[in-house]
Image (cartoon, rainbow, N blue to C red):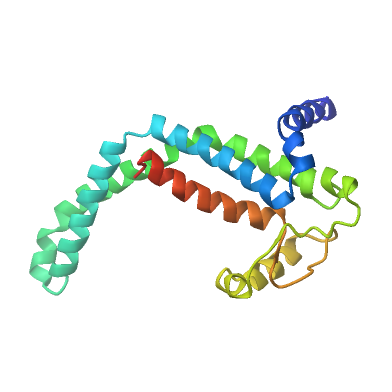
Length: 198
């Protein structure tokens, strides 16, 4: 039963994404998938979260932080801020609740996309089967960017949790997961600005 569910899952996503996976370089195909996922997440956020209320909450919290910083040198004034601090804590809790609301709806699809990308670009994945000489590298970053992003650290961390599969080819190389995360962060940031998400 589980195998038939996984087959349906993979076959469905293959029907959607395989045309771009077969004809495009992995870097471009993963970028397109990251854009699609970021678009869905940002649309969900736009529809589910009251952006005016988020802006209002952030403004009030920021105003309190400025006031708190100014008065932090005066213990008497800090005592007067205790009641307001309780209100700000409630506002912070409301803001967190609002930010988690879209995650309820988008978390499962994101995990499923990760599972699918591993199915395609992992060591025993479809792309490797189609291109047996492929070494798992999706993109080589400029040296300075790989240092800024601590690529060596991520390679080391990955080697602890992931045994077998592709070997690290270069300190500037990114596989499918690193490239997806980078693309997802960049596209999500741009889309948040476009949609006016606070």
